[in-house]
Amino acid sequence: MSDFNDHWLALRASADSAARADHLVATLGSLPVPAHGGLKVLDLGCGIGANLRHLAPLLAAAGHAHQQWTCVDRDSALLARLPARTHAWADARDLACAGTGAGLHIQADAWQADVAWKAMDLAVDVNRLPLPAGGLVTASALLDLVSERWLAILLRRCRTAGCALMLALSYDGRCGLSPAHPDDTRVIGLVNRHQRIDKGFGLALGPGAAATAGHRCSVLGYRVRAAPSDWHIGPELAELQRVLLDGWRDAAAQMADADAAGWLDDWHAAHLASIEGGTLQMVVGHMDLVVLP
Image 1 (cartoon, rainbow, N blue to C red):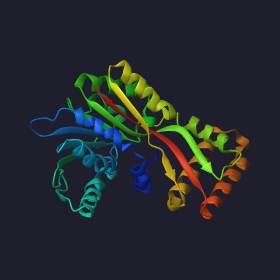
Image 2 (cartoon, rainbow, N blue to C red; image 1 turned 120 degrees about the horizontal axis):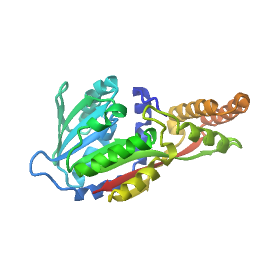
Image 3 (cartoon, rainbow, N blue to C red; image 1 turned 45 degrees about the horizontal axis):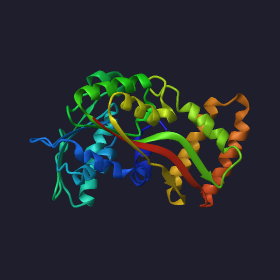
Image 4 (cartoon, helix red, strand yellow; image 1 turned 180 degrees about the horizontal axis):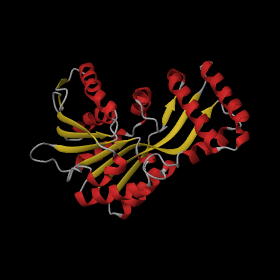
């Protein structure tokens, strides 16, 4: 899925939160705690701020009680929704949250975060990203969309700046559906081919993103830790199942031969019936990476 609109981001939020390999965040406690201003964090492709809201309390638990976030995305409409979504999240957790237009300040009993955001086109502005020297660069569900060249530029810049990275929820090509269908492997193979086409950054890394990033980071001298962060999507998330199923059918159709319409429609209809019957279970493979200088 590369159409990161507001509905899609909200729809996937619970699956993302349940899947993430949160134990990796504890390793970020080894990052130096600045004497003034706290840990600086740059969130790439932030959307409506889900990564901020998930990660900030975990960073606090790892020892970073004061954080300064800069959230960047090319979609100004998504950025405009970030303050309201963050206010609502804070209210639900009895956290103080002040500010709207220029930035936010989140205050908990034991931690605080200052949040700013700006519109940037990551694809063209990779050499101008405001990397936080000695801080943390993070992204969620971004790595599989970018090209190897783009990733290489980012990692070299991060290494020079002494940044750690937390790269969450990179799709790795593994998909399982139950009840199964004879064409599942065929469809997912086509989907994985589609994942490698240009998503705006050049030919995308797709399912190989986490492995490629881990190797490149090791070559640059980073310490790399990785863990699965698979989606487990049951009947309680039927709308997400439908959106995924529709997306996979459309992606496979773009990569398949001209005669694929019939068998693809049959495959889609069979799994749609399982959704409507409340029996479909999906597993979608992802990986989380933490890399430390």
